Image (cartoon, rainbow, N blue to C red; front, side, top):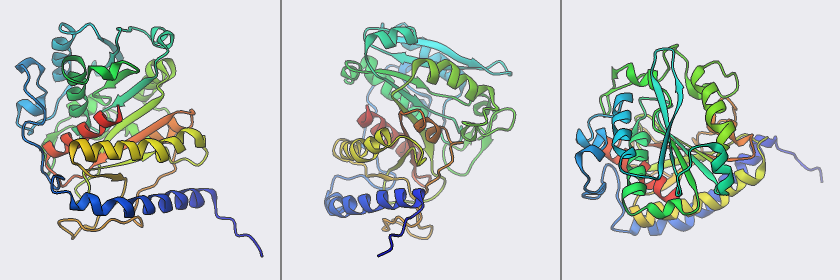
Length: 346
């Protein structure tokens, strides 16, 4: 009998689909029957805790009607640096417009350089927000997780890892304010000051921002895992947050397989159990269906282009994850879903 060989990308993604079909069919009944699960725009009362004014994010201060700009990040970090010995802040780059993108290093004991991080023997985990400024929820969530780690109940997360956070990668785009239909209604532009989409520049390296990301963080600090936060658009899905890993078939199967087969199921379980949010793989939605009832794979978004930051990072024999929240949910719900995912991931 003649063997039929599928193209590598087709065979790879078919195997992923079959694996998750089995997993979802086993888990879906228990998830839907849990009366405590949160759907749509539901969030728990008081989920972000009580904090002094100077440690509140812009989203919290505005009742989730605004998102941070660069000045807000610098003010928040000024408040944080005076209160903790486990934080170090460095300038990732300065744009031609004179705006600074800051990276925050969380470590116990404190580390101030990539060399010190390597000598500690701990893996570095990198969290990134606002590569696309109109998708701001992950940036807000990352500062809430930072606050929990330094001053709350998540300090133990620094026992075995070093965490670096860049809340705003596209600082110039963040400052180019424009209206959008979904909240927050005033956000930055998707592109940088030169009109470039930074999440399409991981190979050509035409932008100052992505070149600096490689030189000053990815190459020097060498994170074991790269997490990038996004938003799906305006559609509805039956889950609170969707994710994908590096989908380039040429990437080493070890890190890619570990994320898909080990890390994702563990994080899904944590998000469901601790935060009562359903997490799923990155997929499209049925536009005319609300509340969503369809759990499908035929419209799943898979791109094998290395131009995307998370995809390109998979070519470095490292792990990478992209997470997006459904655009139809409220901004508070989007922030909460990213918060749940990041907390469970770490």
